[in-house]
Amino acid sequence: MFATLLGQHVNPAKTQLILSKAARHDSVRLLATHDFQEGQLPVKYLGLPLISSCLSLVNCRPLWDKIERCIQGWARISLSFEARVQLIKLVLMALNSYLAIPFILPKGIIKEIEKRLQNFLWKGIAGTGYSKVAWPQVCNPVDEGGLGVRDMQSLNLALMSKRLWEIVGINWASRRWRGKHIVNASYWCLWASLTYHVWQE
Image 1 (cartoon, one colour):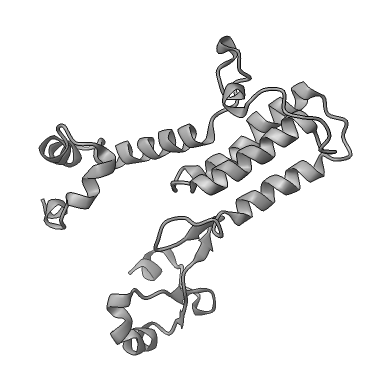
Image 2 (cartoon, helix red, strand yellow):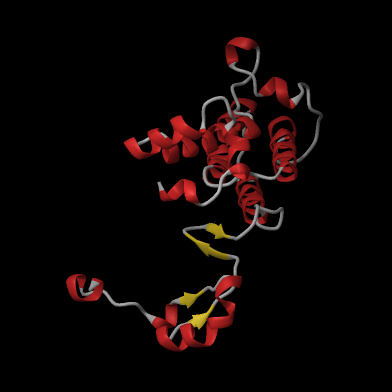
């Protein structure tokens, strides 16, 4: 019906069928029916990894590489301290946000990235000098003595909270579910106690 109405057809050469463990026993029939190649996770879609587990350090490596390429790309430019602050705020933190919206970032990669940003801020491209202020102080608002750089872990938590609110706080059905199941409980601790019948309501 989709192809009939819109005239768009699935390209088997560019399409893969990724099967869960529950459907593994029926893989031969499914692959023969759809005429697709079998794919394996993880794969990338719109620059984001599609995975069936928590984000790992390996999944975050492309983010680290992008940040490093940006910093190295500025090697030929004589950047002042104020310029480096603005680049961290407007460019490098934006790269972090793209991955921090759909995923909870591992603490290890947050620590590595913040250390790299700290070195870039205080030492520049050459890597000479020392850090004059601790990174948590740098992340404080300007009126509190900081530079207004966003703390990655706090930003990640805020973005994930916004995404969670979009799931459970939009329409009447979700408000009814929220009122029944989320009264004094934490959003983050709720999912482990839920069963499938909740979503059938």
